[in-house]
Structures are given as structure tokens and as C-alpha cells.
Length: 100
Image (cartoon, rainbow, N blue to C red; front, top):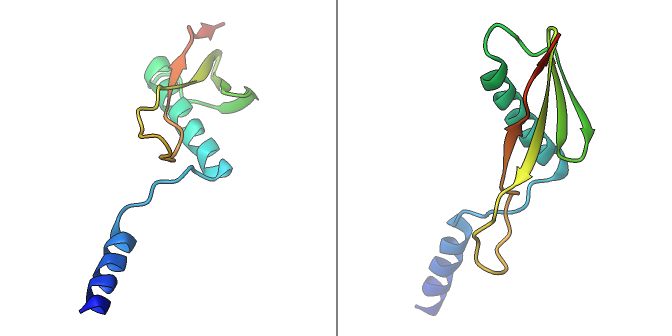
């Protein structure tokens, strides 16, 4: 009976979702996608994105035709229990676009 209880306990732990910090390349990918989404919303369908450049930590420059846009990645307050790890909570915020 003890072995069945132990097996059920281990099975329960193994099936629980695990949240961990994203590996750096996946975190960067999530930031690029967020920046691209904000750029598409800000610049609209008439200005398709041509290039995205990470100019410094948490700052992207996005080029779309004759327009450029700076998108900043801003950390959100993480409301997690102490000791809990997981992916970085952030949002992308666009500055005013500059069009020539």
C-alpha cells in the first residue's frame, strides 16, 4: 500500500505543470515577437516592418518603409510566491513613430 501511495504521489508531481525561466534565446524571441506585435499595431497595415534591431538591452528599433519606431521592453511587477521561478513578465511599449 505504501508503494502505491508513493507511486501516486510521484505521478502527481510529475504531471504538475513546471514553470521555469526561459532559456536566453527563447526569452529574446519572446521580446522580438512582442516588439513586432506592438510595431504592427502602432504603424498599421500600411507600413509593413522591414527590420528589427536590438539597439541595447530592452530597446528595439523597428524600421517600416520611411518610418522608424523605438519599442522598449518594460518589466512588469511579478506577483509570484517567494521562491517561484518562471519566465520574465514584461510588456512592450512603443514610442512615437518617426516618419520621413
